[in-house]
Image (cartoon, rainbow, N blue to C red):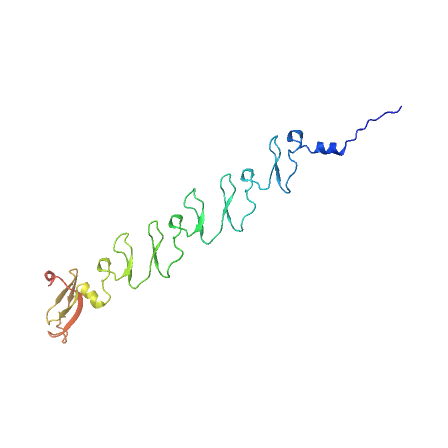
Length: 229
């Protein structure tokens, strides 16, 4: 028994017409006719497959194709990751919402607010402003009052100094004058220093050189007239 087979051969035109149609995702296709080389394919429900060449932040990417060497990356919500160029200085932000930047670290961020100091200068606070420096100078370093800016100079008497730069000036400022002590034969002489300490001088009976004409000059604080013995 001979079986007759019925073959139907598709023409080239027929094939081209059928294959030129885009097969949708719902039919097992992509919904696209072509894809760019190295693109990433993304499912899009029953709609045609999407393609992207840069993975966005929302899909775990950066949204960028490259970064400059040593740049600092900054998050920007769901937008593409940003970056800032690295330059000399400290990286800091002035508050929690501002983007950080490089620069001289201010007092508020734990820095000094300055890029350098003069050799041997004294550094002092300046509230919330950058630290101040007082150049070293000849003299004592002191302040005249609480929280007053300190300075170099001649230490005044009110702060324990003499207010002078020479011994003679100091004697004048402190009201110090020489007092002549005369040893008189047969007499004990008592001298009071600043109305506090009393010193007895022995009699000159046993010393022939201590006569009424011998004098010893001693620099002491001038006692009050009421305290003179």
